[in-house]
Length: 183
Image (tube, rainbow, N blue to C red; front, side, top):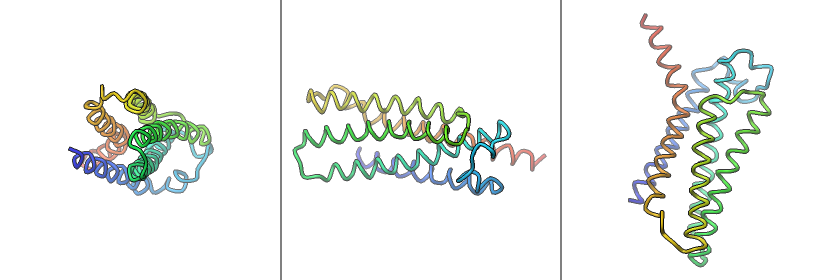
């Protein structure tokens, strides 16, 4: 089962990377402003939506890749299992909270409104942070495997939902363009 989680994780990161590349490629005229733009580049609601989706996709890709690398490093440490479990779940809680704070600050610095993708991403991240905090408490301190069998599937489903939320905007924009070209 753990191989399934590893493959799913890498597949999701590859798809998220493709969404970021797609946003940069498809919106060539906005490429510079997507990376370095500010409030002056946001003139319409569509601009806000595009920038917010890009910020969400980029931050999600960076933080999920970082948290995966950190989790692998923690699992490789030569320390007592209970301490390793505590550090692991604490690091995941910190990574999730850091992602939420970073996404909020990026939107604040850019002067961008939160798109539906950004809001839903934060909601799902909140669920993951609470789930990891619960695992830290249960497995790390109380040594209970009460929700351990639910943890993996919920985490995978939440990560799939995060990708779907982020990919929704570019997918719809792509489909709109295809429909206009056919008509």
